[in-house]
Length: 395
Picture 1 (tube, rainbow, N blue to C red):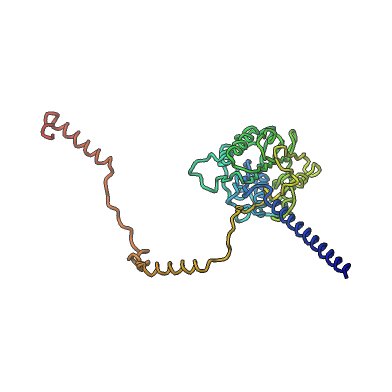
Picture 2 (cartoon, rainbow, N blue to C red; picture 1 turned 90 degrees about the horizontal axis):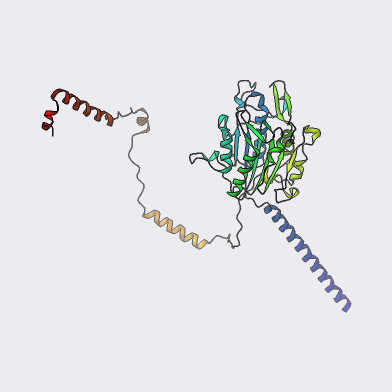
């Protein structure tokens, strides 16, 4: 009997310990999930997407930018948080056999222009000055909200650029260029002004790796389509359109992004491997020494997706409604409505008469300069007729 009692107590203790261990394990898993959710430290996402090339033969650069635009919108970044800069309007180009379309795949399989593209800077608005002003926030007060990068120190920003470049520069519309030093200094200004939490810079151009060599600001991760001395090659020629539709690096990056969803756990290390030399012909590069986190712990959606703003509080918030206070508030509002006088609408003509009513003629008033000129003419005529000796009769 005693042995059975000890056995039952031992089993109870063992079950209790197992339940406690399972509870602690579940709690630790919840904490890990919460840490995973907040580990990047950002509460909002922004994207600045820039095509710097004009002319029909640069069709692929516009398609590159619109393809990235399509992907970030699909993953949750709204148009209000995207600054889209296109140096040329390929959709309305007279040489386009399919007006109002821009295709990124041969045989016209995927139209990336769509019906809801919001271009913020177009044509000759795409300049080095405007680009730097967008990044640093030094823009005129009259600039509309859609043309502003309204980021803060909790923002993760994706900056994508494509066009023609060389060792240490990227051309804007074949008329000017931005250097890697100017770009590095702009990112430093953004950091000093607390305009980003983390920044992902991607560039698809010849000798693209030279554009991130001069970066020195913290929390920047950079990717490029080619190393110094290498060209970034085009892809997907289409005989019907007559040009190449995309660049190789962006094409394979976009294929990779098509497999991503907002809940995906794919990390940045996977993005580094999407376009090996066997596919790109050039050698893609990346730089992570300025970035504080390990790329394998950085989700793709930390930059290509979007998060909702949240605030953490330690206060206890009651979700149960206080019925007594609600009833008293409703009674007070009802009494106030009873005491108020009924609303009276201003008397006005019927709508039919307003529509057919003739516009009222404005009273004519001579301009101020007319009166002054008239007085000057009267005085001149008086002097010419009577001379100065008759001035005493005036005053």
